[in-house]
Length: 417
Image (cartoon, rainbow, N blue to C red):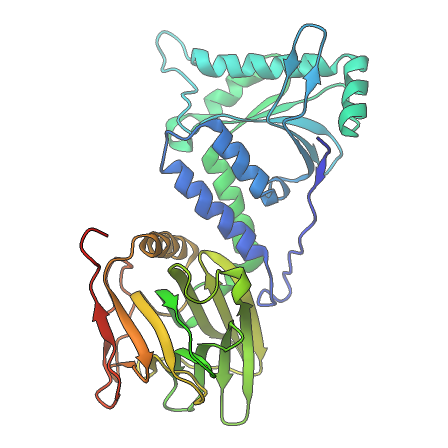
């Protein structure tokens, strides 16, 4: 297997609201890591595959290249560490993954020492280090993987949780063993990614605006746009709307007194298209200084992240939400809505991850839902209905529009489904 270089990603500190895909990478890893940590029965291969899918973790930890499962062959046996990783200084090291429920340091009975299982992992790293002391072995790795590994190779062991080990004691015990070996817990990995994410794009958190989350199944509208939702500022008459065009492109649009801008769009081929399974749709519209941030997220991934300069929007309790409408007036609606949550202001990271987990689970287990067809719409009560509430609560601010000729239809989940 050849080495896999980590492509450097820009960390733009001058303008944190510029369009970026870093948030997708950071938050995608955190979402999957949290799901694995919640299921302690998962084996080491699950974490190996997680890091292979999200190599941004290596970049965050200061590595510039990595090799997964390199074959290290001797006359007697074959070794296969989880990763070889190269630091920014060019030094290669072994990066070995264990389980988060690994027990590491025994209590003081009669003296502190490692558990036998963790001790065997240390012995494993020692064998790796001894392998590279042989010039013939290093040449073998150079020929097989096209990397030039130095003679002295340190190791990093990723195991356990921070609240279950005294890392200072573990550090002292490791210092007495052969070869440089460092311990990182899975919480250390998570914290490093959280800190990098906050540095790169944390300025987007908790901005004045609106954050909408819904479980939706898109239908087909013949000859026009499928109107999904719009938000109206009654003071400035600015509107933000989302619609699905006849070419199956999901568009987020801002309409004001003097401009009409398509802020973000997502092609249907990225998320499954019309009539497919239930989707988790999240929309953020927020202001900072004289700019407006807009984002569309589908199914736990960031697909669009845009900034509109010289446009600010003061969101307050007078903002009106209408489901089944858009800023344009050339189409009707066709979709099913199973769950919705409308929050005032954008969320902090932990809250966003909780919302994402909740709504992805809801999208996979939809029961009852509301059917929107034709001119059906629901409008928020004037003067309220946008205060934050926990994601497990259904939004209670929507009521049937009494002026609509086509009322939304509530559908029950069929028995036995």
